[in-house]
Length: 581
Ligand code: FES
Ligand code: MG
Image (cartoon, rainbow, N blue to C red; front, side, top):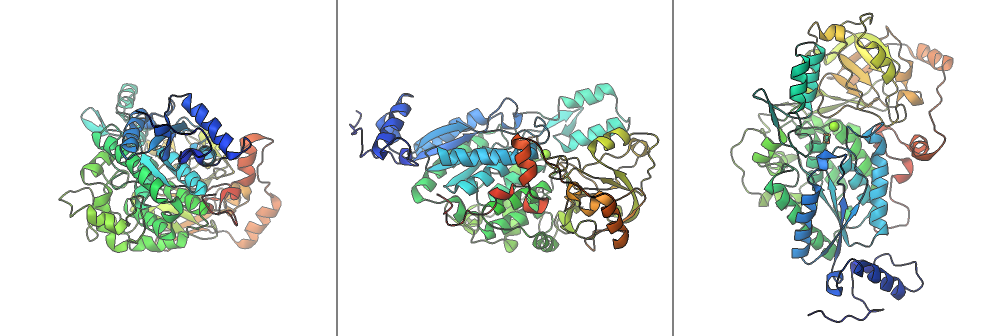
């Protein structure tokens, strides 16, 4: 029997009261709200409980989120079992391969969509369903700015496929097979066959690319339930994680566990440790800088580099190692990794469960024998995956993923072979006339935050065809762009400031000498200051802009890589306004 509830003004509906302003008095506004939601068939009893928003990022254009319908069903079960009311709503969804010009260009738009819809709609807590590379950072950025209790649900990785009995998965193997095809080692039929196997199910890329990196980082930040990073998309474990996430969201709504209590400086330190120890994507550092920036915190690249010296790579996943995400899950997932990394972690950092990371590591138990997560004294790489470089070519810093670079090239001096932009590269890289040897240094300009725009993952410059055919597998490459987390090679990225705003990279010329020393953390252009000054004066740079729309907003306000490529006006807490206002 339904309890009778007065229509107004003493309605108890907790979540629905939030943000009442517009239609005359508050009682009437709530009365209207209730009238409309009742149009969907809700009873007063259903409405009189914590409202849990669910950011639904399902999209036909996003197969990495192809399980969102099932996830929402499991989430709703968890929310209702815990006494909450689930309300799912759509936001932008971004897939790596389907976003033009780049997914990074749209990440900030998704973060604004997420923030504003959390603010606009009445909810006591929000569940963020993310997976594909840019979605999790966009959601954490938006939720950090919105300030209410928030919890991340990861869609989960895809399964691996099998090509002629060889196990394959996106997208390290996509690159490897494409490299073989370019080198004419495999034919048209074989490249078509492997295309059917690389993505064997819905879910995110199965190696330690950006999606898996951000999943692990979200758990390290305390933003998922324990074990939330690793279950593959199509498994029962993933659905149970969703149910648990829903129930936890209700608890967070009741206890008022807002996101600012979880995303603290200690939490970011834990995330950086984990990024290094998993051999994570270089994109992770850009996204962490952006998320931290929303809370008024800075990620110091020098600190990351220092941490790298005593944080070995423990996780044996491609591209730094040999396994896939589903193997990491079977090896116990993040609990196994965090247990090993415990001496380096800030154990008092709070998580969405209301318990600390240290308490969660204890609760996960003693672990078991496995060979995917190595021990601190027998790591797969002795230092962290990412090293931070400085020098006159990159005064604001640059990074290299040393764990997937060729050890023979990490101390190298060579002649610059310069490409002015991505189109120039596409036109000339495979030309027989290209003057290039394996000892040269390929330099690509104008693929930074403003240059391309959106800092595309074009930093993985292909080996010139004439060298690839001779069997050259790696060459030093430098750009102001990013690289997919699934890529590998001796590749210097995120050169800051970028060339499009007149960073030194803009003035590198063919034939200049460049020195890379990963041991000294150095990237230098061996050209005198006077000559650089002369070149600058001869060709002054005008930063790009646009006439209208999102592109104008992007070009006028986007920050450099060290500030996360976020918009300048989105960073920091608004003075005098508590995060939850
Ligand atoms: Fe979506 Fe790789 S393309 S995670
Ligand atoms: Mg990627």
